Length: 245
Image (cartoon, rainbow, N blue to C red; front, side):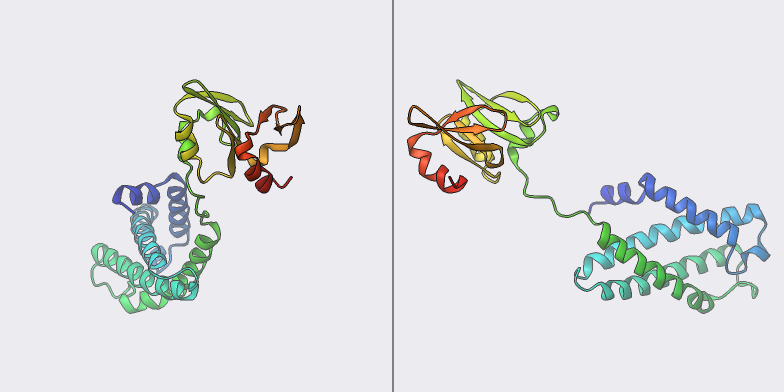
């Protein structure tokens, strides 16, 4: 992940809302005795800055640990997240405390903070790890280069392609479009799509075929939009085998 991608993710609107919610909770609860030491404006400033630093560091730590350990070892991820997050968060709070108050005996020291932060880090790390695993988007199917040529309004659910002079007519479930390109290039870009060539001028998506049709002894395919496309003799054996009729 590049720095730009990381910044876009960490500072995404959804995450900023979460950061703000966490800050509000901490300002109201004021843990670690800050309710006795700080006024309301002080709490807002203290926990506002602390929350931003903590969330930023926790995000980086969680991503690093999750990327390092395999998905089939969630307990290792939780352990790593807990240890790293606990140390990072404790260090941040300790440094903020030292900056604000200095070595004040009323303020918890590093190891006191560590004991308080550890169980919280464990709970948060476990929750984040399982949520990330649960909500992580599945890998996209192999990209079909041909889709980049299609206008958005006709979608990518293909029915069939037909060659017309120097153009390829593309028919989808939502409409049709004429593309200026070679038919052979279109077929090459659709290599990973579930379809087959049935004629030197026609290609069909398998799930758009409703059945075969004979006209004067010649084989045609009936398409979902009721179009009838001819099948060349040279393609008939493959068509019958793949479409099972």
